[in-house]
Length: 384
Image (cartoon, rainbow, N blue to C red; front, side):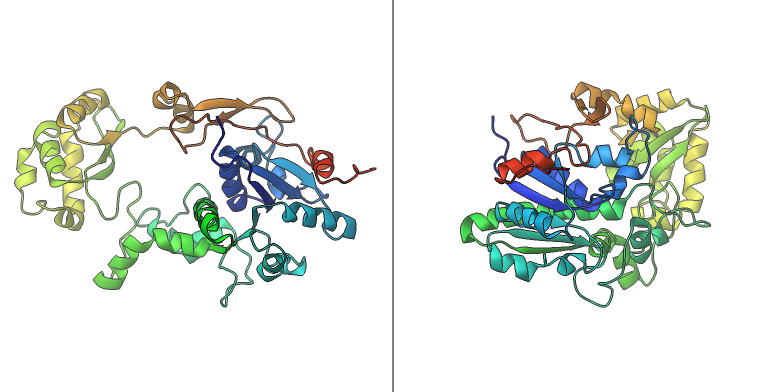
């Protein structure tokens, strides 16, 4: 069965995380993604570490299913090969540093004039215009700029999120925008400029706390592993020293938690805790009462009562637990993909289109497909 994006070609001048994540999802859906890399080591994410059978964890995660072509874009002959690729491409994606594509003659205006059907997608820290357009950007910097760090951590110590959320959010928004542009092109025949800003992606995610600042005059306080706008929501200690992770969203769940799990129906009737807004306001009074009510129980018994009460809860897993998670195993989420140093365990993409296979192509070696792509373009293989 054909994959949804089979027959589409994507040319990617990409590095690190945001653009590679975007194009990996395109590859997972069947697009031919040609990853153009520099001759001096390629994508610098290849060298982050060597933990995955001698390869970088980030690189093997983000680049399976692509073809790697090495080109020196300062060399006129190799630059002409890039032009030949773009002439046959549907999408051009890049996340190079500020001004780099314009210096290479690959800006939107130039490419759109030559190939009007080409979809042109830029991923950058701050966007292609505005006063910050020339700033270099990395995940930590964008977490700070967007206010993520201001609401993450404990009251005494702010923290960054432990994964690259600025890059990941930008990659996913770029992926979505490209799909929309491809759909639009079916009607208009025209390509589209896509300008994805990491700052704007995280700003979008920050709007709930931003409304507290805008209309309430005060940002939500950092709450550590708890939620700063919902109570009870987060991990609570039980009597055997372990934790239960609660996510109480409705008043019905709160009432059942009190009556069945905590065995304290009086808490639900307490005027200090009657609504979520009151519970947040009085969390310093309420949360010790919750843990006191759980102090004589084991995690297993608490979980059984949570299930009986239909109150949402979960585990505080570490990464070993994630890798062995029974739900992922039951749904067949784990795959093996080839790589230059041997098979790599991989997670199937989460784009679960019913009835379609979930392929996971190989992780490419640097320049592995250069000659193959040259032959496809009618060019002689490199003599090097």
